[in-house]
Length: 158
Ligand code: RB5
Image: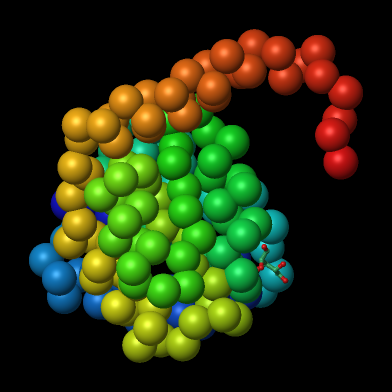
């Protein structure tokens, strides 16, 4: 598969480990940056990978920041993205099988290198099971569609 990977500065040190590991599993990796560990804003890099997925340049994405949270928030704003933050392999595997996630977010300040590799391995190896899960994922995506046109009319919720 074609896997897009990006980080911010919080995830920068973990990124090469994940790039090499994903390549060792037989996947083609595109590194969407950043090229150095200087401070950057995670939404910019989350959007790059999310955009490549919805435009079908990449099959799946892996985003790494300090906690994985910021990257998941950013990626999930892109229509068609289902990003999950995982700090253990079980949820990662089930997020593919049941939720058809297309982006995995990792927190480099939460998980160590070896645990991160296990999470990535389980996530990439798992396949969406469809069936009743497809109905539920369709309902999730219907929520996205329902509210997409209303965002400009909503007061800021935060
Ligand atoms: C950067 O300090 C940190 O906020 C970022 O990597 C991430 O954890 C945000 O969710």
